[in-house]
Image 1 (cartoon, rainbow, N blue to C red):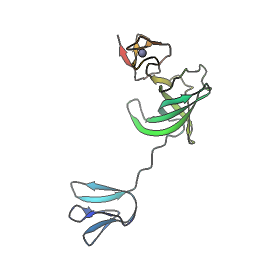
Image 2: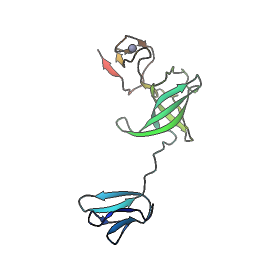
Image 3: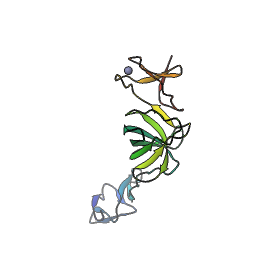
Image 4: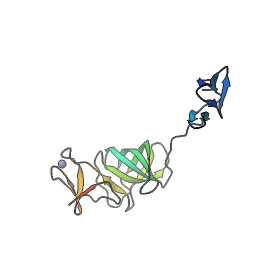
Length: 175
Ligand SMILES: [Zn+2]
């Protein structure tokens, strides 16, 4: 809020977006106060808008609930590269019919999907070889699913998951 007192002159000096009046520092716009510790100058920075993925972006999402046609998901990351995932928290709708070989999904599965419509909720699809299951928990016990050989198995109860994980995935590999 403009005119909000944010400090006193003894603490820091007013930079961009801030003014001093009678020893107090006030904002003259809206934003977040950012303090440079070395110069002791504070500035008002515009608040960054939440990041929204664009069409064709690859996102990481958790399945919340599903039927055979679609799933409600929580998008938890936007993949910028294999190593770089930007954290987000957005609602998405994953369409399952579009895939030639329908992926069997379960709640809490983590999938990699492509954004096909930047509406709210964002529409996602997994109709590409490089998209699909990247992590899951055991449906029969609290165990972690891991990759043993070419199969996904439960590290605790021995459940065998016949699904094929996509690469790269987050499953731990065991001998
Ligand atoms: Zn298990």
